[in-house]
Image (tube, rainbow, N blue to C red; front, side, top):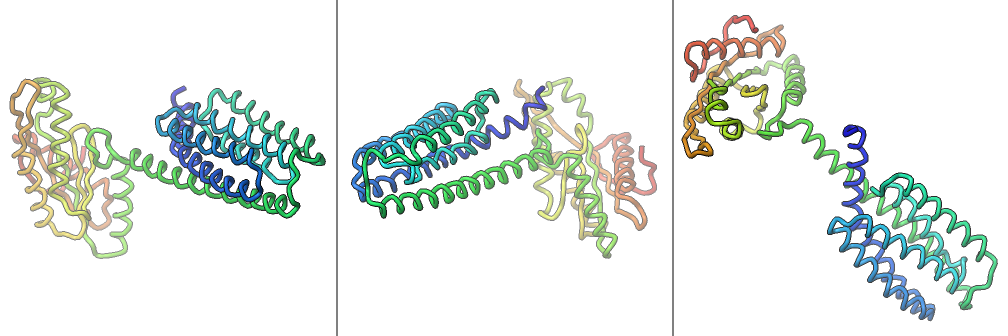
Length: 354
């Protein structure tokens, strides 16, 4: 059930970000209406548009405070009353009924629940539009205005509806793009450390491997595994263990260039990928990382200082060798170091990966 609700929740969050903009656009549009109605000398609608602007200011404030449903109801009510009142006073031909149609896509993409309420709202708006068309299309309005003014209002409203719809679509598309980017970043990051996760590192690794096949560039893998990490969790608790992982992540990342890549490979394992260096340079980076971790001091909730070390294996990607094979050799090398006491860097030879 949680997975099924996720798309709806994402849609609701996106709409909640767009709604304040909808209120701003609608409010500015009604400011323009003030000028139009003053020009047309329809003072009853001038007064009503002042109230409409205030209504959208209130809807904007409600939307910013997270009261999405209240903001939607207020905006929808204003649209309906404005369309009915303007049509009654100056006639259907002026085109104010079109704003009811503009409200339909806004209601459809909103986060209003349950869905039956949203469907009912769409049907009611559609029925209202058709009802106004049937009732007022050929009827003389309550206030007669010059044909030129009627024609001007008609085309202004037609252009305004198209412009507002295009603007809202652009804003909605922008927010969706930003949200998708954040989701992609979330999907490729480890939630605890903020480093790349294993899947993201695999994608990057395969891309680098394909580039390597087209050029002479070298590729090195550094496998880092914290020594006796289970003992830290057992002695100081998982909160201290998490703090240690976060501190180690920052220390390792601080030793790397922007072109290098690092990921949390497993529980307390970290994988680094280096390009454009040689074996001596890779070992130098590995040793720098080992020392940075050795110098860390993590304070437990009881105030005790916790020391962390790690075992490190370095392997270069050999010709005709897969990246997975090179990583397995680096992993086997660090495993051998761990068995010899840990806290050391070793270059992998022909170890057989586990």
